[in-house]
Length: 356
Image (cartoon, rainbow, N blue to C red; front, top):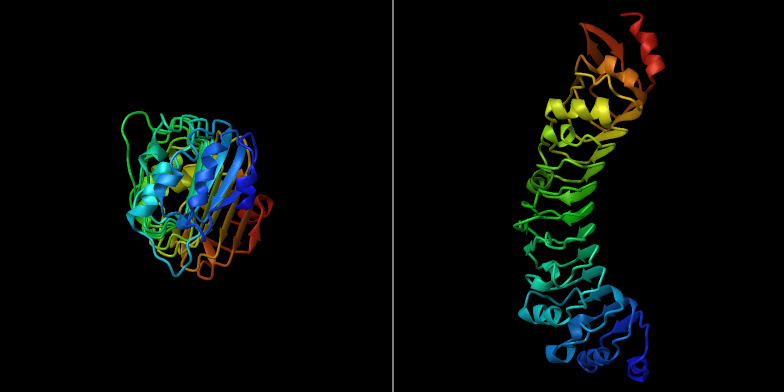
């Protein structure tokens, strides 16, 4: 804190500010006079700020600040959920020039309106919310017209990512949601969505956010324990999809066949299935395929059969790898059987086809 008191008002850098426990966070008021600060500012221990009036105006005149990280750093023995933290967040509204925002450990039950306001954050391109365990819903963020990347992490009680009206997410390209097991609803209109990563997310939330995507190039779904199905349109509607990773989803029993067929034969560079799938069907080959890919099927202990179109489709893949699947001892094709090896290439498969 002494360093902050000694800084001249013309200071342009202050990488880290820690609210003091001794003065109940009153030292944050000193930031109000450092309006030339630029670059990145990390503010820690906001849980110590008890007088919100002293924090008012601490950030909103800092036009040179490009990245802001707000940390509450609450001890595990101290709860949250009261209105004081919302008041603190409310008065810490940054200047409109801010481009990147991160909020960690916020204990309020909802976020301030300025977080989702296009007029308050017109240049914001990246946002991360993490360990905000008392929030049950978050605003749309669809009004942040320059937002390109959004990360939601360890939001234990998050149930709903609210829908918004008007033109939504015109620039959003990357979304990563991790450890939000209760999430059940999310927006689904993302006109420029390219990369989606979902890990330990509620099954209803997965289905909700993937229901209308049309521009994906990369999809990763991991450890979604109650995910039971994926829509057949998920792959067929995303013609540029080239990476699909699906792993450790124990209740995912089957894909809709049309969707998986499209992914596996016409647009996927890599498909990793590491689930309890019971049936895999690859059919209706797209002969316009111009680039080879990789098909990997691993750790699917309940996989029992593979459809008739599978063998003929393998010529479209650079390599085919099968491992950790205890039940499928054969590939079914025209009532004939081929032993299932742990690793196959199209050349090896072609050699087997001659004996059918």
